[in-house]
Image (cartoon, rainbow, N blue to C red):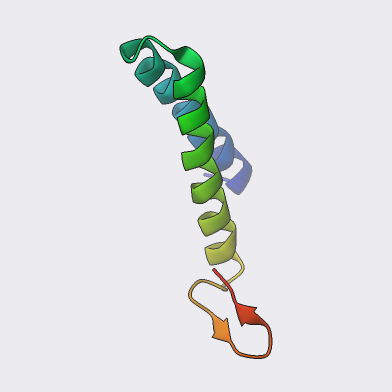
Length: 65
């Protein structure tokens, strides 16, 4: 699976999951907001791992994810 397809699949999956959770809580916007927050964390971690920077703590550049 290409990186673009993986990003799109995760984004679509989290959006659908957010809508379902929002329907359970009877507030779709809350579900979408929660899905966006989770997606942002996943995206930052995914891009960091892809760039081989996960867990890097270089004192010259500060703490990086």
